[in-house]
Figure (cartoon, rainbow, N blue to C red):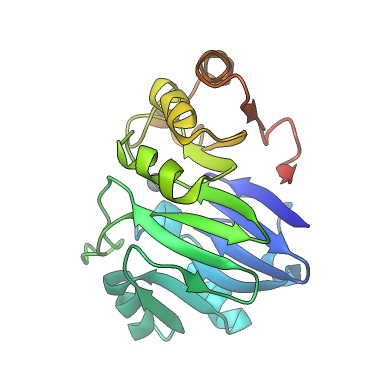
Length: 226
Ligand SMILES: [Zn+2]
């Protein structure tokens, strides 16, 4: 069984049996999540900004696990002594828990010290037939129609907070274009400028994609099971 745990902001743990992958692990704000006890085998990063890089270095070094990221971000982390897998967008990469492909996101990507972090990405996961799209930070983009055609994800993790990314209106359009059955909203509420109206989001999603269910991790204890 594939288990998707929302940790907060854009951080998710996706578990398959006794293995788990952590995405954008800014996790120290969630006191109920203890990464030391989790069976994490990989960390995947969508881009280099601090709210996505988060606790990557501590977790990766402590657990001796590999971080997959676009080349510039991977080489920055490697200089810090982190084990890395350097990739670009566009091809499946195999892991012990499944496979993943990095796809375009329209966003910037620089390290906290200003170093260029390469292109920003979203990530498609294919884990035992469950396809999950983590959009990273992005605006609404026609690429999402291509993502549906190429990968047909069932679940989308979409930023809805606006200001830096899609807002609820554009995220609802993304849910429609992607044709997903489940949406988990992310990247909202954590900064003053990225507040979002979840009720409005639910109305807009229901209007555009009647088969789509929103899993609100705030009321569903940060868990969605597929
Ligand atoms: Zn962000």
